[in-house]
Amino acid sequence: MKVTVIGTGYVGLVTGACLANLGHQVICADISVEKIATLASGGLPIWEMGLEGLLEEARNRQRIRFTTHIDFAIEEADVLFIAVGTPSQANGDADLSHLWSVINEIATYKLTNKLLVVKSTVPVGTTDAIDVFLQHLPPDHRPIDVVHNPEFLRQGNAVHDFFHPDRIVIGCASETARNIMHTLYKEISAPFHFCNRCSAELIKYASNVFLAMKISYINIIADLGERLGANIEDVAKGMGLDKRIGASFLQAGIGYGGSCFPKDIKALKTLGLKMECELPLLDSTEAINNNRPRTIINKAKKYLGTLKGKKIGMLGLTFKPMTDDIREAPSLAVSRLCLAEGAAVHAYDPLISTYPVQGVTLHRDMYLAADACDAMFILTEWEEFRHLDWSIISKMLHFPLIIDGRNMFSWEYMRQQAKEYDLIYLSVGRSPICAGEAVTESCPENQRHLFSSR
Ligand code: UGA
Image (cartoon, rainbow, N blue to C red; front, side, top):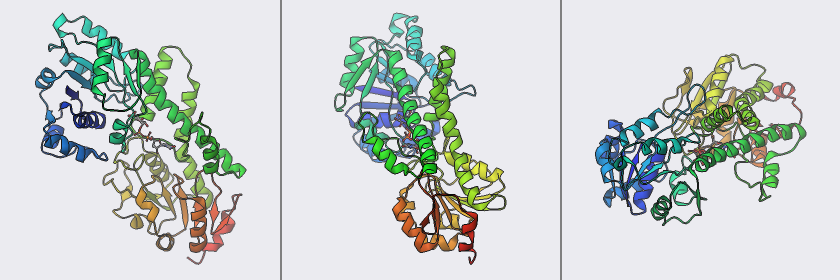
């Protein structure tokens, strides 16, 4: 089939590259001359695992083209995907200005025999509104149907998720649209879930918010369990073995970030307000998550007394590993809190070379970020941190406090390392480890003498 994808962000580009890989003829269109020039010359405007190879193959097989000419992109297409961004506005509403500007532009072309597919995450009712808008145009400007086909692509795993989805959700109004979408994705083995457009839109929000809710839930259980002497890893495993609960998204830590969960919660809350429907679980989920960075600071203060004049090393700045995205990353709030408390912040992330928080010093090596620090925070579970040499870290730190905000190390492993190298290791929902001895009560001040020789 001939497919055009309008919008070459991570969703649009991954969708285009993957559809080309399935054998379709794809055009990726964007208004950004710079982005299209990069793509047309073989470059990549974003980093996403597996995408480079996929694009290269698609280029070699002449299955993908890039353009800023929307007229050509529309004329060529049987199926027109819209994958433009829908960021949050100040009031929490999704900003649909890019989407409507594309729709207005599309509406000036002949659309008969073309299917319009909205991939962008949009407030419930938007795809119906687009359909109503297009129905008022002359007959040859109306598409076959307007479909909502939400994406469930995790950044960093987007290519894998495209080819191995748990489900393909199609919200549409006609049998013809169903058949076209079925043909488009026929090579992918996953259940198709057909429903109306509003349901498809709500499935996307409800799924993301549910996952965020699961994370906030495990985080409060972690805080409680920590006070009670439980181990959150064991608790989450025991819960996850229940198929009704499921094991995923029960990883406790400093909370979720990224361009999706925070934005989608805000958008769903706004929808609730508009519809006069109370959604208290959403407020709690958000409030719990907003407080996560503070819990790390409180842990540090328990052991350091104050952060004023202290040097904090931060490992990992992105909102999760395998991405260069720092949007809504917990590291932003953690570093701002540290700076506000009067600490100096030194940081390292494998993919970050510029950081928006003024006052944070970036290093090109994880050991340099730890040098002479009073505490080292691990904020993203990058694989390379697993190979940290604790003998070196222990010598470099001024005070040997490690706070693992992602529980990336097993408690048993860190107990051994702490014992060998006189470390204090704190994590989330697990007992603190103090110079090899697990302490269930906070006794930091009187542990300090252990390190006075440093
Ligand atoms: C999320 C959804 O997982 C995708 O299905 C969806 O398509 C995408 O949003 C979107 O709307 O476009 P993504 O934002 O890439 O994907 O990230 P996730 O892998 O879901 O992680 C989100 C955040 O939750 C990260 O900060 C991660 O560290 C955190 N997290 C995740 C936890 O703290 N605990 C967990 O158990 C899982």
